Length: 378
Image 1 (tube, rainbow, N blue to C red):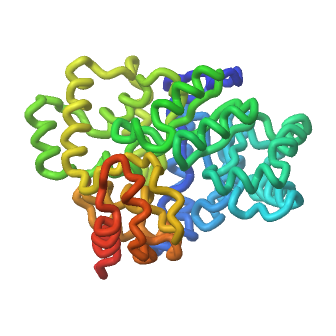
Image 2 (spheres, one colour; image 1 turned 90 degrees about the horizontal axis):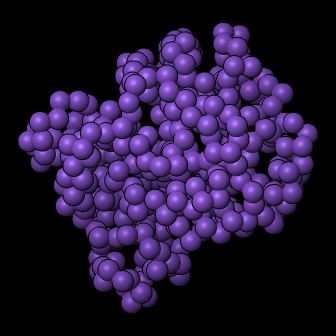
């Protein structure tokens, strides 16, 4: 297993972190973790050198933290780095900060959380947390020893990321990053800013939620075949992330033992970098996937805020992703992550967004098409 220091924390973490959010379940119920299979997966990863476990309050409908708390009967807590996250959206008053942290410590059966994140920060969650004194609270909790290192995970535009990361002496941040998302959300500009501040960077979604590990559309498969590349898409995608300057660790939400074995094997290779031919292939793949994009939205957010609350860039992200991977079912499953009051059918065709769009996208008709595509009954 390869290890890297996470930012300036002084902690040597395995380059592969185990994300405990997609564990095997019983009867397709995400709230019923298959403990036997999940324990086998974690024990294998730890035995092979993984020392970073990542969970959060809502994972598996709140059961991931409970499962994580049982792991110390089987693995040495003091040899592991444990990460969990404050449920930002649940904070209504300052007292909630202590309420959720203490509940998490109890569920995790531990006296400290090594890496504690403010979960899923966006402009709204950030403003709410600031108003409830979260920065002062974090400082106090770190001094108390309940939290060892302080960070945040992020889902919004670069401008929001810049505001957040420059507002506090964060030790690490967690961003969505893969070779298709270099410009998405905080993107490579966010990584560069974090590096300049000495802030550690953790990559989430290195496989785009598993989509980069699936059988690709025919034209993508032809690009891979014509290149002569014989390896797996998983290896190509993970090693691309690891070779990016400033990326200290990537998280993989593994769902079965075979995935664990494959990821661990890749993370244990003597060289994590891509060859020049593999780098060229990644560029060709990015271009090929981008040709499948239906709506040329760059998530610049100039169209926002929508007077009706329509989540325009988020809707186009799900719609484009489903199309570039030829997976309409994925789009149908993911669209509900956007609240009903913010979905495309709430557009009243006022046209304000179209006057602001630098890409001159016909946003109103594109929203209508995207909504129809992602609400078709299977």
